[in-house]
Length: 485
Image (cartoon, rainbow, N blue to C red; front, side, top):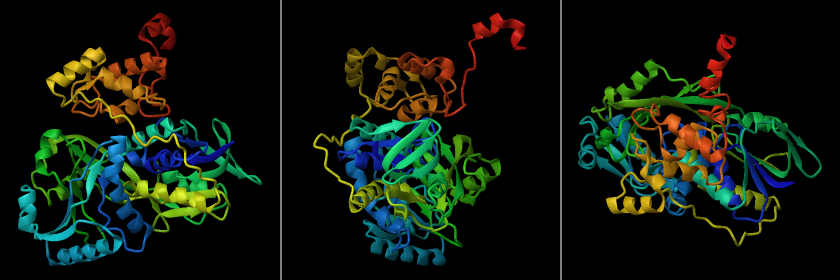
């Protein structure tokens, strides 16, 4: 029997799994998709917020400021990609300038660091492409950017290294409480655990209702984004927000940790939790709104648009704690600034287990570190030559847009988490994230996955259940002739 079963493999679930791996506990994380970080985690702005925005006194405000301060050490240990870029909240008129004063006061109460209000001219000295219409800006020196899906992968890989089990393609359909433990009914069979942690994101309300705790609902709030080519990175090195006005925070323009530019999002409530479609109408509005901050945004430089859905709770705040059902812990309604808050939330969940009476014995063999990937892009000639001498696979470039080698892909496949999809490789190595969006490298990536894992080419998915790229071998189809017609 497990000590703890975590439901949900987003950045919250993986952060909790890694935190609990510090202790002598038998922990398993179950995820209904084929990999970690495949839903809300993979489709957000990747901003590590300063902690000034969320209302003082809320859990969002408390955990965002604490989480922000944890990122430098987390990056040092796990090498997932994090840069402290700083952020501006820009104002265009006197009404918005008053809002900057409010954010400064609120952030100071939250414990946010590095806050100051500067003039529009001072902001443009730092970022010359900012609009001349900007009159003032709230500067937060401690804000940054990260790759949220790479963070989830790093947390999960480190958790596996320290003994946590991961079960993919495992969907929880019911939870039954016995006298001293829970039985999770899944599509892969029953799982028994003394403690259950519900970190199911958009579906946390459904999981909670399975044990009779139905005192909140999760409504998906969609945000669509536009990703610009790396040659547009000149526009800003700083995250640019617009001052809130009329209930809207406006559209942000941000560098990514990999030096693209991201513009978005909108914020619309939708009915279907799995609806991640983008529309040309919304994308056009996003681009237009982004030009209010930086008018150099170029539609022709868009290489991808995407959408993500935030888990907005009817409680309008994070819900974290043991429920009335002893042993069942909800970690729900974790929308923005959830990514920023994740490491602090994980520590808090461990504290909750201690308060519940769980014996939390520190594991003397816990290793907080994760080996960094060897990235050939940007290596010096001598570094690359030495690496290829050690492993010739690093000399075979598979993804030319991002300069990703076969060696990097093979390394990603053998880090403890099962890889069955092209997008799982993409999230780890960036193969397929460049201008051609995998048009040329995807077949080679599939061949490498097949060779390294033993999966047939037909078993390899694009991005989860049923998303097969191949259905049968051409030779087999030709031999069948008219039988397939």
